[in-house]
Length: 310
Ligand code: TXA
Ligand code: MG
Image 1 (cartoon, rainbow, N blue to C red):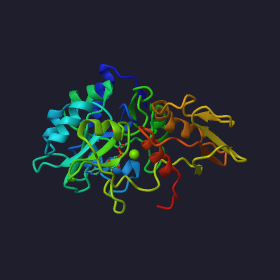
Image 2 (image 1 turned 30 degrees about the vertical axis):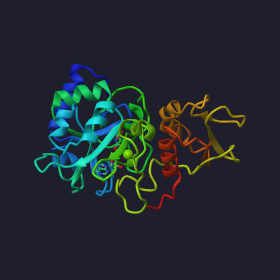
Image 3 (image 1 turned 30 degrees about the horizontal axis):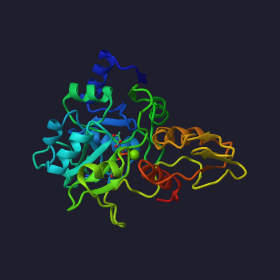
């Protein structure tokens, strides 16, 4: 059920969360499937309803630096980054405090926690009203395309109460930065670009390959039902074409006619969902540059096109 944000629906959401049940939560990146991060049962329900592998930990959302500092060991990089980008699409991985009340299941037994403050009025209102951190993975069945509007969430979770926050303004998940390594390491490119981060804290490392450090970095992810073909110049017979930038090729949809990466990020998941139709046999996607938000766009497309047998 999609509900319009109001004092009453906020109360309803709080009641549901306090009972250990889940709600659909709008953020600026993608919609989240949110539960009380301090309640083991609620966290278990998140894994269960997403059909999510239990080795893939969840991001913990708070309304303020102060509340999150109760759960993680803070450091200078964290302070600089939080002051620059929070609330916003940046998730910081930090050592978990021994005294933290966050469910161990949420972090899959890791000694670290991934934390962020989302930049969406509905999420911020709810988080400060409930005064508990919320664990919230993207509100899609595991491995599938993330949700950028309430209706997408409802398709995957028909019985869920979903707070309607309209279309998300970023459209890609948060950037995940590991601050527990000697040099800050980019675990997942996302809504804040690597270049923006480096302006604040200097050079950051890319993860060494092998091993799943951010377990969500599974190869097949964000996948529509149809196969995806990347760096395409045009559609082949039966394919839909998802264009980028000014193009002479016939495109069914275009991520951004002007070649604006921010606009393309907002459109990516929505357009993949729109083209994922039985009357096509595949989706061909135009080449997208790799600088700025292009890094995250290419990351999502590569995973969406990876073999599905994982
Ligand atoms: O924008 C977002 O981050 C959205 C919204 C809802 O906040 N959430 C999201 O969650 O994308 P999810 O569950 O789809 O992705 C969480 C990612 C996974 O790749 C997971 O492996 C990583 O965060 N992660 C969580 N805790 C971690 C930790 N302690 N260390 C390393 N990676 C972690
Ligand atoms: Mg996800």
